[in-house]
Image (cartoon, rainbow, N blue to C red; front, top):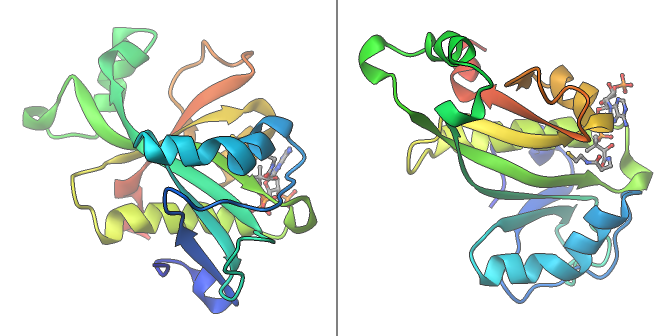
Length: 188
Ligand SMILES: CC(C)(COP(=O)(O)OP(=O)(O)OC[C@H]1O[C@@H](n2cnc3c(N)ncnc32)[C@H](O)[C@@H]1OP(=O)(O)O)[C@@H](O)C(=O)NCCC(=O)NCCS
């Protein structure tokens, strides 16, 4: 698989895990995310609730030393996600009047984590670029936004990568709903 990003310029590749695939070891410093990739993600794949992709060396067939992973599911941004109608109307202004809907198709980053040894080296940002290009290069079903329930510690990372908060009411919550408009890429 691979390609829409400059990850291709390194020896690392992005691979989608099959249902029975396992990851032998991983540590991003967060136990819940470690537990997801090491134990839970096969069940999500089996039940078709989320797909998981790993960043690794091409010859690491057994997924023994993955550098990072992310999981994706279908999502939507709907009128009920906004804490008031004015915000929704402001959000909807990006659409032609005739195309204003009660909800808009999106893909959710369920989880994203980089191994502790690779943090701060732009890997997470490259993966976000990969995901954005993945959905614009081959937009099979219509997907306008990328969403994420961002951990508060990771919010600066997402903001730096063009994501914006949907609401203000979750500002003090442990996670915050952020989105990226894939049409912003057309202006690159
Ligand atoms: C958040 C995470 C995915 C970022 O990946 P990364 O490869 O380290 O990030 P990048 O190198 O692309 O970007 C780093 C930038 O993001 C921001 N950033 C990343 N983590 C941050 C944190 N914990 N607190 C504040 N800023 C952070 C900084 O602005 C940093 O820029 P700087 O290098 O100028 O300081 C990674 O640190 C990680 O796996 N963290 C633990 C798991 C996690 O929180 N996942 C997110 C779940 S929503």
